[in-house]
Length: 282
Image 1: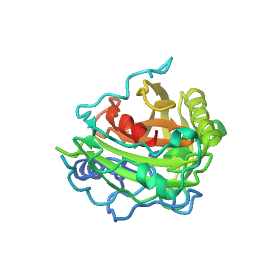
Image 2: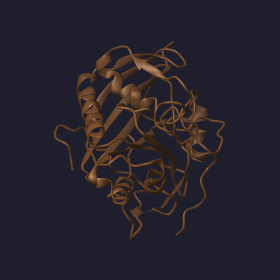
Image 3: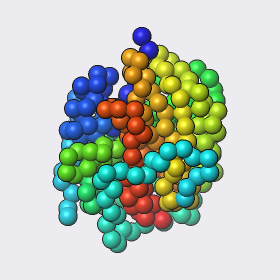
Image 4: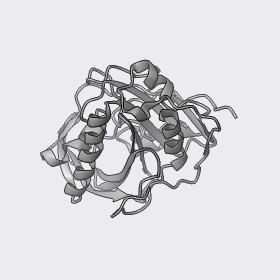
């Protein structure tokens, strides 16, 4: 039977019960059976990127106290939007340079950066991953694998959950590219969203995957460029909405990922997460 592989904070496992438990406990995207660690690496694929394929670590500690044309349903709203903490300091990524691992680690969202949310480390994805059966959809599976292309020079992974009840559950991977590659990454994704609207299949990893459709969403107004889209997975015949929000500041790209395992509605992506991340990159 066709089933979409669920990865990272948006997909805690293949069983719906496991998925829902993971959403409540930590991250809707992380695989069950987590282990700690930052999951950060050199960005060239050797366990470097954590994506939807990533394992979530144990729940993080409690925190201290422009719309795109042609977009579909909004992805920037959530029942627990939070607020960026005042005084967030940017790393200076607007100049387009390739951030080093140390700079990326300082720039990625941390506990206390957004009120109402907890942030903790997340492991990178296992080796391998899936490939779209048509090249025009390959940028989408690269993100699903946690290894957006062009491949990053450095990567940092985080899991983010609502502090009150563990929802929404969001995963983030922050990737350093340089302006040319970062711009190419977003543009290739934008084209893939349009070209793969009717869905696509993929192979590799745990086996064949079916994605029922892809649609553009309204992007949060932050950074130099943003793109929001939904990929509808197929879990044993049940549609599972997976939402991605991509934010570029200079040559650095933040990818946020969440999912809805309880229904077919488009899950909200808190805009405050993107606003705070943009502030830490500028």
